[in-house]
Image (cartoon, rainbow, N blue to C red; front, side, top):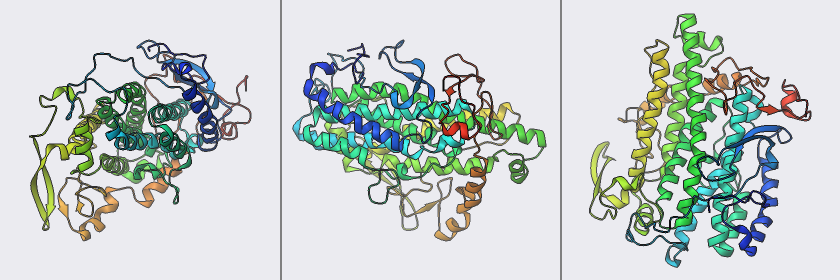
Length: 490
């Protein structure tokens, strides 16, 4: 199971050639996927050769092979980590029993819903980001955007494989619907709200890949605990690629902060207007973007009290973050202390642990995001700055769960509607912020060039320098019209 059949029309390590019916079904879906990619993928760069990473094996030394390739010709495939014949169900009512290789009938609909929801986020993010290439701050960043995009496409393939293989006609229809929905479409939107929000600037992209892709990491981690073994093995390999997406976001924000520090130190001021006039993004604006994207991503975990979460855990379809750390894998007796808004104030409620599984997962996510903030603050510290960025409280700016419809400040204190209206523009990006950030989004696509608002990375990709040809622009590329030089091969 470790070796990948690279010569197949659909590269895979699931012995696709031995199941002709499944192979035909997926090969029939493939042209529709390519049509979707060409119409909804990165606009204007489909003819360019991008220095992309792809998998030639699922082992430690084989999953990252680099070469210049046109994105429509990228070798999207189906990869699962090797099967462990001794694996048992790690949690829920069936804990300790042999992991399932087929879907039990009583859990079919629940599991299909989980897979479809996860799958829908993958093409959605590609659609959200399809125009960003035209304002890339450097060729290095342009390449990273496209690497994220093609890997989101491969994650879609991973989920579609599960739908086609284990859910029959229903799964095939769901796979078609994944190509029919569109991010932000009023008539046929993506399933989760965050994935219908526009990403029109690179600061938002870096925040999205920091916070929203980190939500994806935790959702995948919960699915690696699944009693349904093919789902677990699929998600384990996806996590390998997801790490790069979070790296792109975290280092992108860090480089933005670094450039802001350089400008503040050069000018000897923290005045936002002076920093903006110098072509950098002031720290208060960066903080408002953190507040906006973190709070949006926190919503993705769902309600704090959830009967669905309880059912998923009981069935063993989803587990907790690092389930092996817990002593009790059945979780029938435990409780979770949940602060709730009540009568104009707050009170604590003891929620049965199974019903609080969304909040348990959210705990791990918030802790992980705090580590990211700590690393951003080290950038400020190394620059000799006293300013710090922070995460808002998880209750801030929520529209899902027990805190929706109630207002809280960034410290989590309950406030009135009037206080919220008065302070909102100081906590979340306002129209002036958005217009300013968007005004900085001008392409810088030459080798070694970089925009004024962001610092270059410490190192390039795969031991290459930052000043390297990560994109070979075709003469027809929109990149050429934006100032890039066509390559000798273009």
